[in-house]
Length: 246
Length: 133
Image (cartoon, rainbow over all chains, first blue to last red; front, side):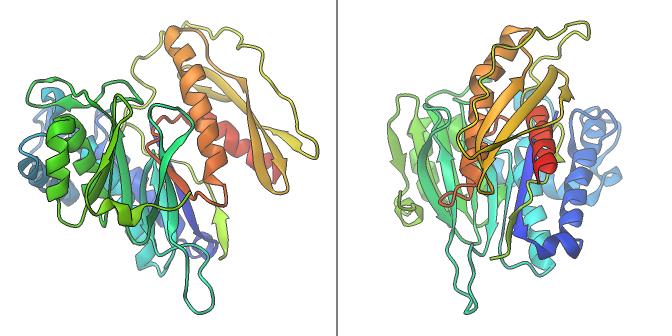
């Protein structure tokens, strides 16, 4: 079962092959990292049939990044939710960030890649002859009112990731208790890297509202916006600068 | 800008267990869906997508296009065999429709946090756009 990745790109990307490359990359990531494929590197690792040396080098890179976020979050982020090795919580954002970087390397100044609600932007929209453009406008889904938007975030060369308990039920496990996290209907993180923004958002939801508030405030280069189960909202001190009008 | 929403669907299968919480028994047949509303606003043109077969049953959508924009999405067929299917129909599809409509709004480029995704919805939607283009 998959997610959907949509690309908002200049039409040139369709012709220079970079879009095909980005899609090919995502399929490659799926083959290597999917826990639902018995022959993926991740599945082989989970069954201890290989070591990381026998995997694609990207696997070690992902594991190192997962360990970084785990340590930074005091163990609230883990590459083994429920005890089973499964780095999907990091891989999705990472794969989308890389897909966007691939377009940048191919010469695209302005694009937006959205994978299942996690967004990586480059440049902006409506660039004119003098190079001026508007920021991308990313709506944050309102977890308590399906179909509605809570706020709009303006993004240039940055990522927007949202995790939460409201949408798919309480699916984020607090690794310290082994029980589903509660308290935050959704938490959005914005910052340069989608891989980190997504992992930070997941860790913060696992923490719950009290801990998440201080922790997200401490993250350098990243800002957060949260909606609690009861509909209250809070945000880190630098988040206001990212909010778009209406 | 030379802006084209290509809405390319790449299946990053398995990275997120989206609608696949439970696998249905293969023998389960979807029951006919609730009466769909397929009203077409004045000046609009309805384009029907192909039926996309999913693990949960067939999904078919219809889009109403007006002045080069999707103004409405109708779900013509959806799985309704189980309580879980009903949840998809009552919660996920409205969300996907809202996402589809807002994603092409002049004021919103994309939506974060709407992680419910149905491969069947997108497949049928894409074919509707292909048929209508």
